[in-house]
Image (cartoon, rainbow, N blue to C red; front, side, top):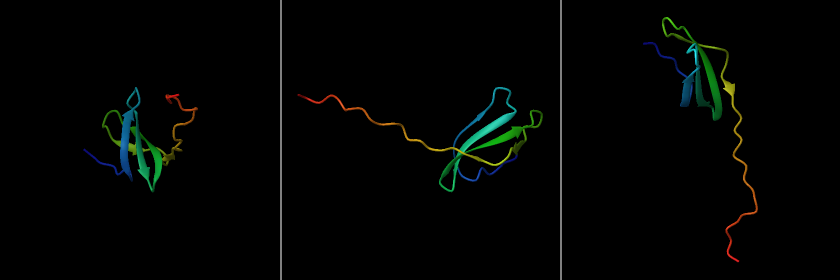
Length: 71
């Protein structure tokens, strides 16, 4: 089995439905990224497709007026 270095800590990975693309979410130099690999369905070999895409981090919105205060 071959290996490939993703370049950072991996948080998640997934094949597409036809299993010919493999997506890896990881962190490189403090930035969240997704790297896509093509997969040879006969041999299972992975080949990086392009460069890792930066995924912007948007924290969940907070707000509201609060609630649950006693009156």
